[in-house]
Length: 338
Image 1 (cartoon, rainbow, N blue to C red):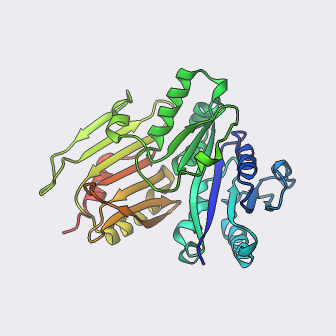
Image 2: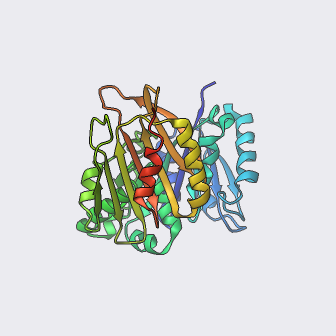
Image 3: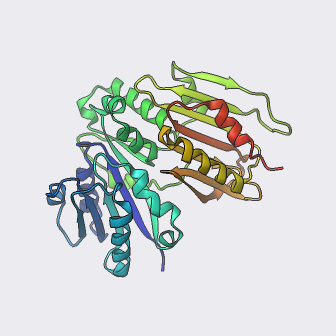
């Protein structure tokens, strides 16, 4: 039996997550959804706002799903799979303060769950009026943007066009792997949205997005022995918050097994300062791209597309705070395969 697709909707309080969920239900009438709706309070409010049809709606009240992960989510997954012929796709709407990495964790690192479920997309809904202040004041907003595959810049009609362009640049700098889509008045185009899958690649040229930031410090290093291309590394401290985005790129093939272990140890020590690691890796004896990403305190490794005519190249993005770029470069370079 083929796996079932999961869409995870995240975003800060009031950004428009439930409106997006209703848009998906209304515009994909032929799809039978199993909907996991999570609220913190004992009384459900959002679930009453969901369009009622033939869809399964599972309410989780009085607890944030990302905090009660081991108890609630695994039970729900098991129960859903027992009647998997009754629905086609799962949508999880997280609370406005949830860390999506914790919710996504079982779908990316648990081999038994991966056999049955595919995390197709993580969507973050962002309020154009409020997001810049939220990035300054709340770590959750940073975590949600950093982990997403698609960022919906919502309510753009409430700000001027020049500011929309500024916000788009900010979001792309924080998460260069994500697709940023502008939305006017909660007018979500679901068909366009569903065209975007979790196929990681940079949505902008890293050299360009780094150079466009006035706070950029760029360090150039001599090519390693036998390098075909000089390595690049960039370190951006964003003006709107204490977020830092590091980009490292070099061509040498890496030993995936030892790199996985080293990164796991690194996250155990410094996880509180690292919001996200995501990389396209040139793995030794791997003919396809290797996708490496942090999921909470864990590291998930999956196989990507063929390199094809593209020159194999490690492209690594680390989002966090108080990050030392030279130490991270050394960490990755130590695992260049012999």
